[in-house]
Amino acid sequence: MDKNLPEKLLSVAEVAERLGLRVSTIRAWVLHRRIEAVRVGRRAIRIPSRAVQKIIEAGTIPTLERR
Image (cartoon, rainbow, N blue to C red):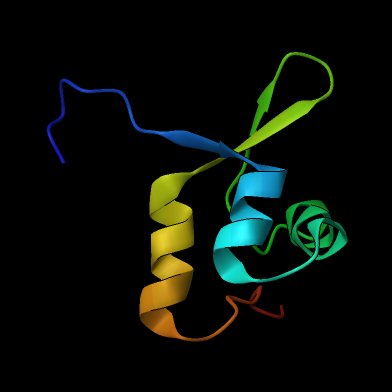
């Protein structure tokens, strides 16, 4: 990706559609920090397209490391 171009940020609904999951599942991932997210304003959440691509490439749901 060109460093001069801004990365595409996707809505929770767009991510859910791309992954074939429910919006509530994506919101839970954000809440539990299982997917990278950006808060835009007070309520809006956007997810970088690279985070979605990582999930697709890995073929698994990323998890948090237990301490």
